[in-house]
Image (tube, rainbow over all chains, first blue to last red; front, side, top):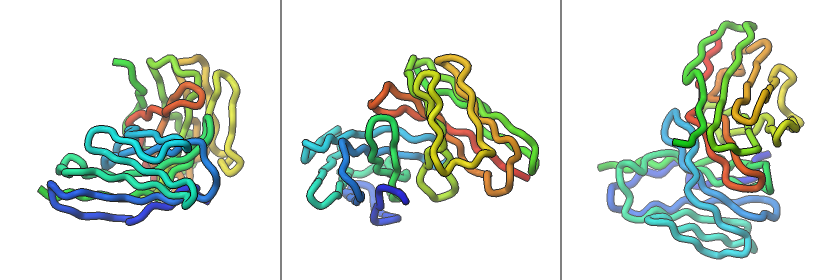
Length: 109
Length: 111
């Protein structure tokens, strides 16, 4: 079964609002990654957080990791219409990634 | 620009007719991956190469094969496509244990 489960499955917000997506996983990890996928396109790597890190920032993105709860969250601040995409968390060790179910984010102008 | 390239972007094939999808990279990464992604689902790893070593996922059907003739190229062969094989096929590359970089994908339609 898939390692990560994400919620919500779908999220619709207005431009300028913040978007929060959550990911839960089942087994211990070395790191957790977040990817974005625009419709019909490949995946783009956003950010990687290691198991010994609790929070990481990259531009408008903020990722948290709680290994005791086996969960992570991705926060996109001040969202833009261009942020419309599906977002996947992925866990894995060395060469094997297992993706979560994804959150479809729609940002309305 | 260094990148992962997939050809073709769209592929239409007939039920049972063999098809080959292509992936090339200019990143000089030693690991190359093939994923299958069905509509509204997460990508699912089919197999990967670490250099010339082939690693097949346990639940990848025998219908799916792969070749990696050199560092830059990797092919996905579907020997007898069925309707259930219609999907987006994603190629990715990485250095071992590091971030994976994805190509734009090939959307396969089986008639």
